[in-house]
Image 1 (cartoon, rainbow over the protein chains, first blue to last red):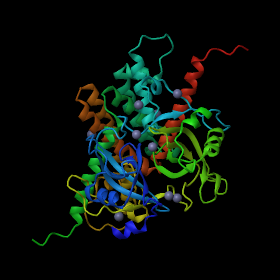
Image 2 (cartoon, chains in turn cyan, red; image 1 turned 90 degrees about the vertical axis):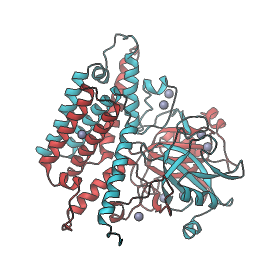
Image 3 (tube, rainbow over the protein chains, first blue to last red; image 1 turned 180 degrees about the vertical axis):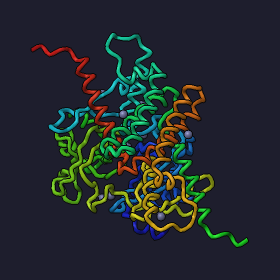
Image 4 (spheres, rainbow over the protein chains, first blue to last red; image 1 turned 180 degrees about the horizontal axis):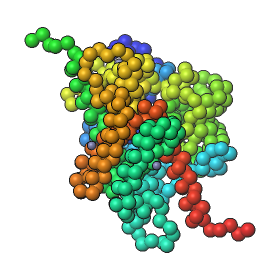
Length: 246
Length: 246
Ligand SMILES: [Zn+2]
Ligand SMILES: [Zn+2]
Ligand SMILES: [Zn+2]
Ligand SMILES: [Zn+2]
Ligand SMILES: [Zn+2]
Ligand SMILES: [Zn+2]
Ligand SMILES: [Zn+2]
Ligand SMILES: [Zn+2]
Ligand SMILES: [Zn+2]
């Protein structure tokens, strides 16, 4: 532990940068700094602890708000001046009450040739947030926006495929079963990698629409998977460990 | 644009911190700094550009290695001293050739009460990397490790469920279809949110095993979803835009 701390590249204020990342969703939640004491405490308590330059001292996130951040794993970067706390947060990470500290999007002025223009979906604007969404979370937000839009009177335009699925559970279930079959088919008929990726995307999307209808978020699904993985990891460890002497 | 730059909280070296995140997988790829010129260039070219303190100047990532990073969206944090470049990287982000700069894991010495102990799977060690893996990527790595292990002679221990699925495509396809049906069932029979989350987890896991068998990564699947989302976003925009005058 001391050895590890000695190897870090502390800046002239004796700090390293710390990025807090959500273990299930991958969201970057906050960025702060840690000194030796803060890092030591994080490792020992499993709760994200930092050094506050403004307060001039150690600061355990959540000690006043109750919004602690449980740190599951710690990683250091190639030149050892920046850490990632891979974490399971209790409540919002930002002092403003936002889930993550990054909630303002900068509009890229002139999309360059080859660069993708920033396509804002309804959803981004209706709930007033511009957070960095990875593909899975962006798709989930789009589905949620389509569902919100269904509550408004129709503007007469042709409903999107997602809207049709959301308003027809029978069609949706038929599609989920069908897409599962098509994914299996790619293996059974050796249809190739590209087709398999495309069918997996189909299945995932339709299953996510079904989850939305039931109020289930991908975060919850991923949490279930993490807890199972942890359980099976522990069981495997136990099975392989030499029997205790007594 | 100038207005936005004026609002940022530049440090005494006239820099802001920049975190580069992979849009599809959510991986935190690298951390660096940007001055006004670098940020301007990033916004205009759509390629991640930084200020290098060691070189003392502007630095477009990839200009020597070819490993450019395409920046799709830019976000700023609550106190405007840190940016996220939500990105699609071309090749590895780290100068060492690693996918991400964080590839060293710190073993949490004494797991605290309530904290989850660090459970290392085979996979983490066989390919020699300790990268921060979110739940989806961790599950994918576990499945890959089970597949690797199948290439070794059996040690006589009972094979894991994943190993059984991997070595029996018929069983695997049967399970994928079955799990899709069980997920639909949660909606059809109103089995409740918790059950829906659990069945979605079942389906996702089994479908990921099937993807592994075909050499398809979740990154590829997510890329397909992003490209479709972009396409449908553009189509919707076009459909809603007033017809051009000429
Ligand atoms: Zn570094
Ligand atoms: Zn904040
Ligand atoms: Zn916008
Ligand atoms: Zn939001
Ligand atoms: Zn399909
Ligand atoms: Zn900040
Ligand atoms: Zn690096
Ligand atoms: Zn280890
Ligand atoms: Zn099931």
